[in-house]
Amino acid sequence: DTAVSQTPKYLVTQMGNDKSIKCEQNLGHDTMYWYKQDSKKFLKIMFSYNNKELIINETVPNRFSPKSPDKAHLNLHINSLELGDSAVYFCASSQGKEFKALFFGSGTQLSVL
Amino acid sequence: AQKVTQAQTEISVVEKEDVTLDCVYETRDTTYYLFWYKQPPSGELVFLIRRNSFDEQNEISGRYSWNFQKSTSSFNFTITASQVVDSAVYFCALSEAFYGGATNKLIFGTGTLLAVQP
Image 1 (cartoon, each protein chain N blue to C red):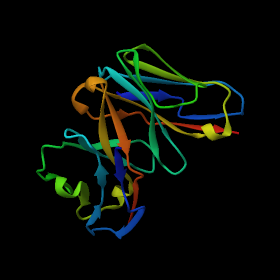
Image 2: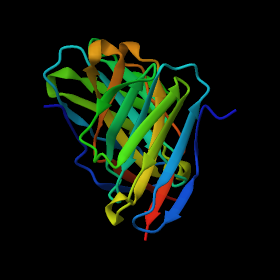
Image 3: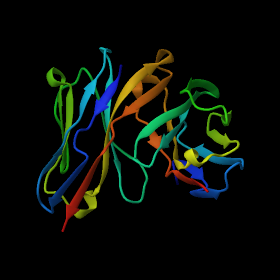
């Protein structure tokens, strides 16, 4: 049983397209995240949701829109994809209180051509 | 501002050598947590350890050990008798309290690529 699962694992698309990445966790956590890992492996938070409420929006372009239909799901929709959006996107979850560890999905490698 | 520095970009060792990965952090918080994650070549991020700022005891888990020293703001990670399967990028991270603790924002270092040669 995968704890944090995200799909697809690979996404290759053309500039200007719109795409979505889905994430689900079965850990019973109440907080979910999107992180971006660039080509130099640097990991940076994009968004955090706690019980479906947006908590962190880390100056991400508004072409990126997260959606949390329930606390077990956090999807990421990206409009008008640009070359610079190419990266690995990681979904993660944690139990919100007391600085609990984040558990990450396996990542989605997005390539914008 | 919160910051994590992993000065070692790449380390290469031969199997069975011991290796220490350095992590230095900056924070103004009195309560904070530190983490290590492993990213093997397959790409997933694997949680290794979490320590809070009030617990400076060293931790050992099999071949892995961690040395936390508040006086030097360091949280170093040592692998004893390294193996090829230890080859990965290792990230140190610092938590930043947010929204009354309802979420845990991790500030990651830039990672250290460890290559263990057979």
